[in-house]
Image 1 (spheres, one colour):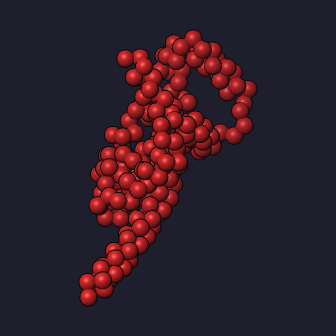
Image 2 (image 1 turned 30 degrees about the vertical axis):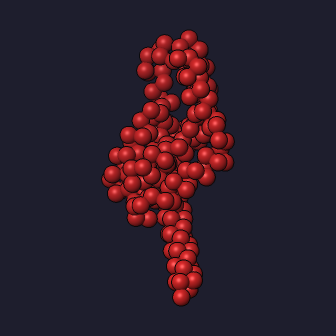
Image 3 (image 1 turned 45 degrees about the vertical axis):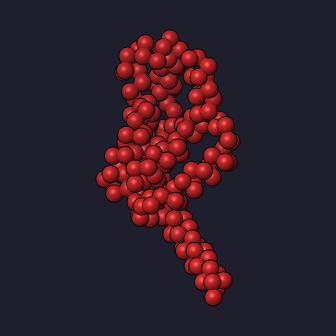
Amino acid sequence: MASSFLGRLRNTLWPKMGWRRYGTYLSKRVLRLSASPHAIAAGVASGAAVSMLPLVGLHFLLGFVLAYLVRGNMVAAAIGTVWGNPLTFPLFFALSYEVGHRLLGGGDVSLAESARFESTGEQLSQGLFAGGLDAIWPTFQTMFIGAIPIAVLVFALFYVLVRWLVIRFRTARQKRLALKRARRAESET
């Protein structure tokens, strides 16, 4: 069992087929979905947007809920959550903390905050919940507040980009099929 768990963990952090091939696979999977361009774009954007939130473990569920609310495709939402992964979470969480800190009126770190961070660091070294939920709540709250505007921005960017790509892909596909039909009709005559 340990080897299968380690294999899955390794495959999660570094896919067997490599990141480039895995990205190509997912993009083709999205482009070939049989939903409307809006549904595909809204689904991918929903999954990517909720990946900005510091609610690790709930991204699939939240992606499905958001996709449902904006009439997005559920498969596309699941694929969109790949945007948040163990390699990108540290960046997202640091960015969301920084934005949340600025939104809450924070600027430079004061001496009192510096002391609080040191005591929080000591508490975390003894165990994440050694000091109770009160020890991590201020940091989580700041990250969550900062993640919301980032998630809105990510939703908008992914929606526009994916919708444009789906429309472009389908137009090119229709042209290829029309050309193929024309060649077939020409060869039959």
